[in-house]
Amino acid sequence: MRINKPQAVKPGDTLGIVAPAGTFDAQKLHEGIAFLNAQGYQTRLADGVFEAQGYLAGNDMARVEQLHAMFSDPDVDAVLCARGGYGSLRLLPLLDFTLIAAHPKPFVGFSDICALLLSFYFRAHMPTFHGPMVCSLGQEADQAGKDLLMKIRTRRPLEIMAEDAITLQSGVAEGIFLGGNLTTICHLLGTPYAPLLKGCILFLEDTGEALYRIDRMLTQMHQAACFEGLAGVVLGGFSECGPLDDIYALVGSIFPAKSIPILAGVAAGHGEQNVTLPMGVHARLDADRGTLIFLEAAVDEP
Image (cartoon, rainbow, N blue to C red; front, side):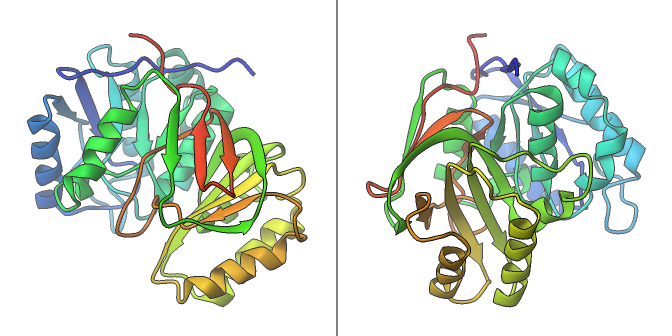
């Protein structure tokens, strides 16, 4: 697969803001925009970003057009999502992946947005960024937003040192780093957009899911052969999902002992911290040292 790496951004560049999923709090969006502006970036809101249709941020075609417009606009240097929620899955059959592949740009989001992160990699061959969304940038510690901006402009390999990580299974593995929200990935199964994970380091996170539901989703992925040939597993935040020890024990039971390295407790996704992780680039997981090293940059020279 030929990878279409986007160009790195720099202070002064324009960050486009889209709402491809659920509705959001306008005040929180403006707080996030103020943070981005204070860091030296221009911002541009997609037309119709404040529209609402029930729990969705406008109708499906209008949300698709936001994405198409931001990727095709030569004055927009990166595309950030306002919020997740639900709705990205509905857009996949309507998206012009050829257009997106022709205009690769850093694209940032997580949770429901991981349907787009994964599809942009497999359909447009473009690395993406699993990271905070604009509505959270005014609420989170400055470090999360600054980390996001650093990652989309860094043209060198990155190392994530998981300070509070737990080694569930030891070992070292290399592979393409992919994944995201467990619930959303399960909803992609059985569709043309289901990710192909053989040889990958799989990242999973979620929020507000009872243990039995996490069990059900992992079992579904296991029985759908999603875990065959995996290089390794990284677990991010599982906020409001019950005791983490129970989740970690469940994950450990899915994989045969010592089969692949599994590292838990990486501060990414839903949780108090949300470190930005490049998706679709080669990485090395060392579960014993608690490190995740991205061996290549997700962006090219501008």
